[in-house]
Length: 325
Image 1 (spheres, rainbow, N blue to C red):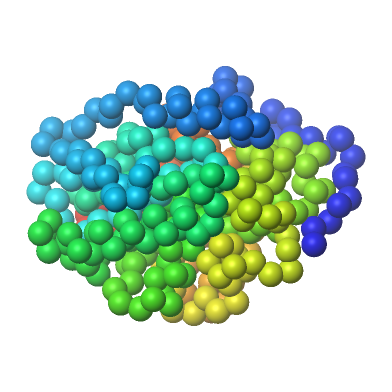
Image 2 (image 1 turned 90 degrees about the vertical axis):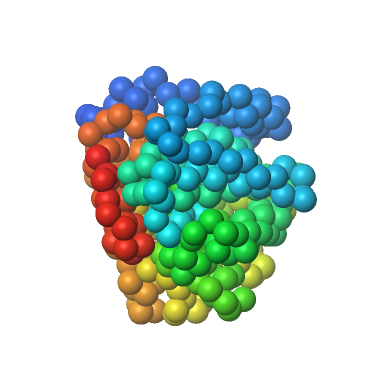
């Protein structure tokens, strides 16, 4: 079980902990509120009202609804698309979020790399705890595999990726697909992934009050997703990616995280465990960067450089040219 100790209040994060390039974006960014049901409902309603993305000339956006309500995919196809694709999974701590909130990022990535990006709409906890969100991601992967021939895609050049809880789901998806057999992801692109419920169970993290996503928020996310208190001696297979013992044979991974992100330690530990299991891993740790900085500080030079490194890595794994900027 987690450590119940509480550090001194002086450990609370301050603006000075942030890289100067990130201080203003985090000062003006609205706080994430997930601890009460009404806050989650309000956040999800707002995300559904995101304005439509500006698409590059010739790019198409197709919305495909699956048979299970509130699930499906948003498919971004650039003109002259290569045979490569990325299955992308949005974040939100497993309890908030919508595929629409990542439309700008998905459209831009599709345009710059010339690949098809398939953004997953999955069900959210606590109404739909594990395994429902992961099942929805598996359904999206299987949809891409079935549709590949008709869309000019190479089934073996499909990567998985996501941010925060979406990164955790992408990691879990790679693990589940490894056990199911069949065509495997070409790569896994993991932005600040939410991988380990034991972080939430370590109450000593609470007083730190991390930017954007604190451990109190983390507790809500994991408790909602698992349907039980985090940190138990055992958890269901695929529910907590960091708990898997055998990581051999998983796809090459890029793991990116800021060094003052709540998830820093668990992300670095997972990358090291993958590497020890013989998996090709690139770890990108950014000093002075908190959770989600690549989105919250979208136009900052730090965020642009971070996304560019990730996209160049992905392009190399998919065998496509990178026009990342």
